[in-house]
Image (tube, rainbow, N blue to C red; front, side, top):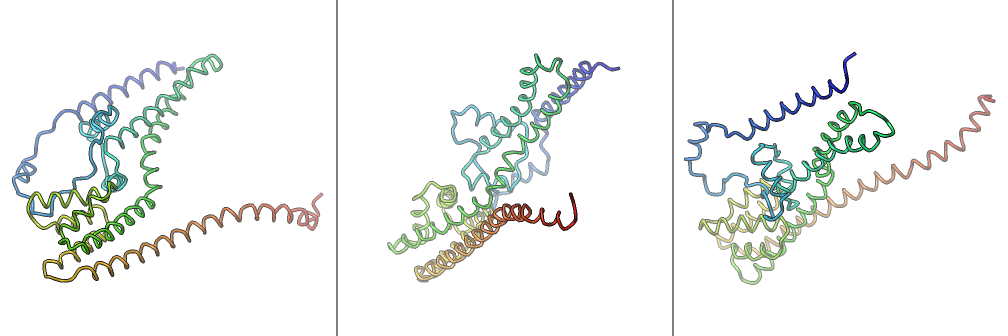
Length: 303
């Protein structure tokens, strides 16, 4: 009969060797493809720049955040576009996101071993169970931030839509103060430090530094954040180049956005009420079964 300790040691050594090989391959620089090098020589078109995505770090003094950013850059950890958009809307950084994933995965991997060592005087020798539970807990801890982010996705989208509506109202007020279209957008964007306002201010600042109209940058930001209201605002503000009066147009568009947002909130409230009704009906069903079971047993002749 094979020794379980020897089998566990052999499996652990093999796993460590594979891990070292994977980390070495990930850290070593890859040769640059000729197509990628030639693509860098092509000047990007104004307003069609690549998606900058979320920031790497926010606090340069945070060792954990810097460690998460380092792992993302050197280990080439995957960051889906949907997750990057959620990080932007929540104002989180890539370092904070991967730091949470690494900490939860490491805690899930180590906790079963610590529990086994603590219970060793009662259970005797340590078996292979801590390794199996540790791997399962590590996988669960790695994906837990993604699950939590997905569960709050609806609320994040609602907050972003409300921020855009507020920005629309601020632009109207700035426009009524006899500012130009571009000045109204820039003045309203610096009035708040919410993630949507920060990204709009960044797009406007980039367009100002490059001395070009900000409309294409707003279109790009609208596609990046999946907020069509930003593109609608850019369409309205472009009418200023044609000498059109923008106050009435902005007011009517803001009212439409408010009505649409109110409709979405009512739909969400109705869905929440329906889910609450389901849980409220469970005790009623249980009490109904309690009162119905004895007569049914009597009718069936059960002793």
